[in-house]
Image (cartoon, rainbow, N blue to C red; front, side, top):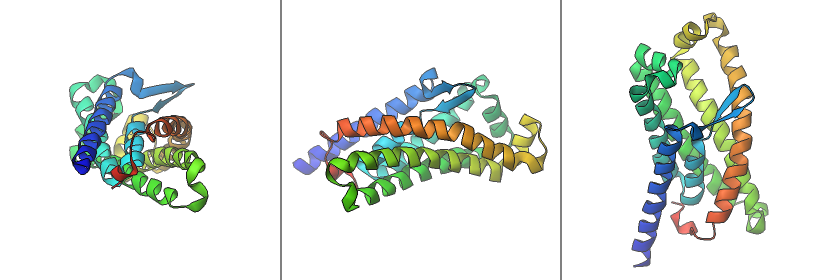
Length: 209
């Protein structure tokens, strides 16, 4: 009975996080303007799910994160001109970028959280530190994996869209990673810590599988 209730609670929380991912993806809430930088917040529900329910759930939520990005490009092509161009130029490569980076981020974030919770100095009241570390690193992984795969698979699209030489794509990608990735990671660190701390009282560690 208890095991069945845990499964239901886990499925319910996962469904709620998927709904939040969709909400963020298709509304301005998914992007936070920090000066000239537009930082995404959509990775946060994935990280929160990975922290509270483990790497498998993190990978599932990452899948929906990537899927929502693809659906948005298909249904709202004017919302992201670069993504539309990348999908048109090489559909397979862009799908691999969106899905691969987000699934990997969710899975590895869950593994990171599990590992940090086993570190003696981070147990007990200091668990909040592990939440912050996971929120920060998980967000950075999202940025690095996404931009890294774009660089690897869609360098010509980046070169064409931004009007830079193909040899300069690497510098552009790294500058974007620093300019957008760090603000995203800082915001993610704060939000993930606050949410996970609040939900940790009602979500049991039995979910983390």
